[in-house]
Image (cartoon, rainbow, N blue to C red):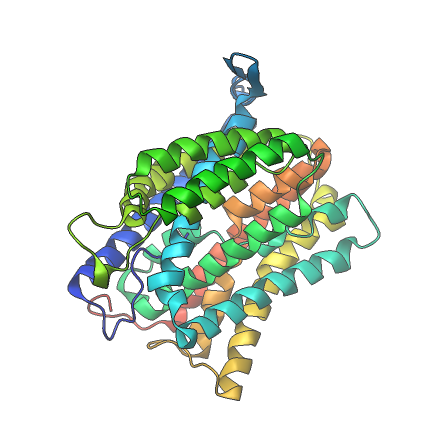
Length: 408
C-alpha cells in the first residue's frame, strides 16, 4: 500500500497534507485490524472452533451465468476475488504516484526504488541459500521479498509523534515499488496452464478499456464492468486472476491535480472510495482466512527446517541488510540522502519494519505451495518473521527516535 498524497513535506499543500494524514490514519488502523484478524485466525485454528474455521474456508461458492460457471471454495474466492480488488487499489496508487506523486520525480525515485530492489534481492538470495537443494521448496523463493505497509504503519502508530513524516513517506514509497516488483513476480513465475482462448478474450476486454481511455471517457462504470469481464477471462486463462485488478487499475484515467476541472480525477475518486474497504474489510478477511496455522503437534524441529528458516532469515535479516545497505551506498555516491529527521539508526529501524511481510508474503505462499505441509511451513516463517521484525523494529525505534511534542 502506498501514500495517498506524497508530495515533499517542504512544499506540500494543505490539501495534500490532509490527504497524507488520512492515508496514514487509514493504514495504521487497518494494520491494527490486520493483526487482530490474524490473532483470531490463530485462535480459531487452535481451539474447538477449528472445524467451523475449516468449514468457513472450504465453503463451496458457485456462480453460474449460462454456460459460464465458477465453482470454488470460499478461500479461493477471497484469494482470487477480494485480493483482485486489493491489487486494483495497488495499481491505482502506482499509476497516481508515477504520474503526479513520489514516483514522478527522478530525484525522489532513486532512494525508494534502489532500496526496494535491494530489499527484494537480498531476502530472495538468503532464502535460496537455505533451500537450494529442494526444488519444491524453491518455488517459494519470493515469499520473503514483500513488505506489509499496513502492518508496518500499524506498529509505527504505537510510537506516536516520535516517527518523523519522512520515515513514513519513505516506508510507503518503498512499499509501492515493492508491490510493483511483486506484481511482476506473480505474472512471470506463478502463472500456469495457459488457455489461449481465455487470454484472447482478456485482451479484447483490455482493448475496450484502452479505447475508453483514448476517447476521454471518465465515468468509472464502463471500466469496472470491463474489469469484471477481464477478471473472469484471466481466472479461466491460467494467469493469476489478481492481475486483472492490476490492469484495470492502470486503465482508469487520471488527471493531475494541477489540471483538474470540476469533474475531478476518476482514478483518485475510485482510490479514495476503495481504500477504507480494503484497509478495514478485504485485508482483515484475507488475514483471517489465511493465517490460521494449526500449532498442535508442531515441534521446535519443525520451526528449524530450511523452508521456514529461509523465510524468517530472509525477512528479518535480508530486508534491513538490503534496504540499509542500498541507502548507505546511494548516500556515499552522492545520489540520494536520507529523508529529513532520519539518521543511520532510524534507517536501520525502517529496514527492520520492512521485514514485516505479512499480507503479500502469505499471498505468494498460497500461490507457490500446493503441498499443505510446505504451505504451513511458509506461513509459520512469515508469522514468526513478522512478529520478530515488529517487536525488534518497535523496540529499536523507541530507543533511538527522540520524543517529539507533536508529529512532523
